Amino acid sequence: MYSTVVYKEIRWHGRGGQGAVTSAELFAAAAVRDGFYAVSIPFFGAERRGAHVVAFNRISDTRVYVRSSIKNPDFVVVLDSKLLGLEHDKKRIFSGLKKESVLVVNADKEVAESLGWRNVACVNATEIALKNRLVLAGIPLTNTAMLGALAKVFGEISLKSFEEAVKAKWSGRRAEVNLMALREGYSGVRWI
Amino acid sequence: MRLVLTGNYAAAYAAKAAKVEVVSAYPITPQTQVVEKLSEFIERGEMNARYIRVESEHSAMAACIGAAMAGARVFTATSAHGLIYMSEMLWWAAGARLPIVMGVITRAMAPPWSIWSDHCDLLSLRDIGWIIYFCENAQEVFDTIIQAYKVAENEEVLLPAMVGWDAFQTSHTAEPVDVLSPDEVSKYLPPRRPLPYVIDFERPFTHGSLCYPDRYMEFRYLMDLSMSKAKKAIVEADEEYGDLFGRKYGGVLEKYLCEDAEIAVVTMGVLSGDARYAVDILRKEGYKVGLVRLRVVRPFPSSELKKELKSKKLVCVIDRNISIGRGGILGTEIKALLKNSSANVVNVVAGIGGRDVSYEDIVNIVKRSLDLVEKGEVPEYMWYGIDKEYVVKAVGEYYEPPAL
Image 1 (cartoon, chains in turn cyan, brown):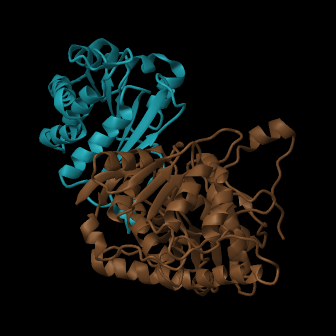
Image 2 (tube, each protein chain N blue to C red):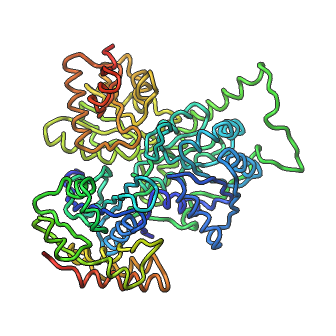
Image 3 (cartoon, chains in turn blue, green):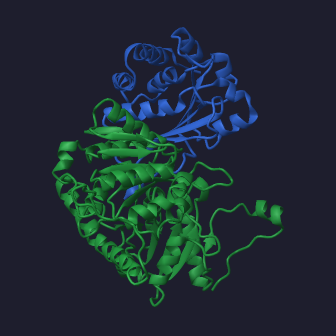
């Protein structure tokens, strides 16, 4: 029975160019390294930088066949806190949340507190990205810092597997700065 | 080797594992990753193949035809407008009996512009003499492309093959894929044998010249004959693959919980994953439901479907396509097969233009279909998920295809 398969669902929100889709892929790659079955499903909208981009992960101990979009995520990761300030985007971010769902946001404590959600973890991923010069076409690449933050909050996958997934994706200096961002996101994330 | 790959990357790895010698393609969303990865393999020397760059899909298929006629193993991939733009060349490839394999990442046709999946692009070319496979996920994309070469190059078949998968939900979804190396695959798929249809300067021949009415029909008959033999080749290729590598897909049809089922859900492509889950949910509620997933559309699995479906109380065919003015394409074909049986076929058009079809939707579809059968009000076909308010606002009425 496929429906007895228990899985956790993650929804990523970012802007085109920030790397939400890449983060979801790295999350799946790390999970698989630790023996989980995981998929990453991107949803592309307008093919341009700055547009609201959504990506999904499903993760389980056994194979998952379901591929429809995620409506009731266990974790929601927000790569750009400004999305939370826009009514339409905020609505998408909060849609389908369950009582126990966790929000992991790229924001300072103050902004995170103002969200009024019971389970919020935050880290200033923009600062981490800028510090590590992870910027492309003027957009801070907050994805690996937020991946680190989710890694800590999710808690079931080793940091080592995330590091290996990053190293498999990039090499040289790009790998280095992304590893730094990953680790800083991991150690810097705080529960509200 | 287990890698986390998108459906598109799985396709590129499959072409590499099949030792493809020539790739010619033109990029189009959502296919682009396939040829990006292949050009990367070729550039790095990981794949001993030639990449022929072209200015359009029409030329891409022309280049594939030339290379295949010279005896090479050839791969290409496209989507939607690219597929339709190359459609004239697709007839030439089939008529020349060239075992080209092509990935078709299904995408809705414009206008209005869309990049998301439905199967109208691929199914509009179902009658031209290409074998048509359709996959559910990235692992199956990898396995099927390799199987497709085995079938297309079979001397009793010699027809080109399209392997379809859904835009984004399969093409860009990354999942664990067990990848075989070229060496492992060579045990299953030997190098392509130069067959009588290969260009040889020592033995020149004329190809594709004028054929009078006293002969043309035999050419089409022979294609039809080969297509009928393709079915056995498809089943055998799947069996042999399973014996060697441990994965098989039931040949032309994959079945789930069908043995005692009174209701059969028929699907194709990525939404079959949610359909499996929906079958479980309905089973728990006491409905005797099973799933039949079409893995092959051409040759059409007529006898296999008829055997499986003829004594069901309800056959619910979910089509991610619409033949405007006729209904779902698979539903139409299956109704024709079952016309003298007691099975009630409800044909549901859903998921057009990338509209999400979740397991909750499929549970709803089955319950509504059952209700229509019990009331004796089965329509010719029905649309699922239309925003009626929007339609009424636009044109003042909502149209429901009537019961027959």
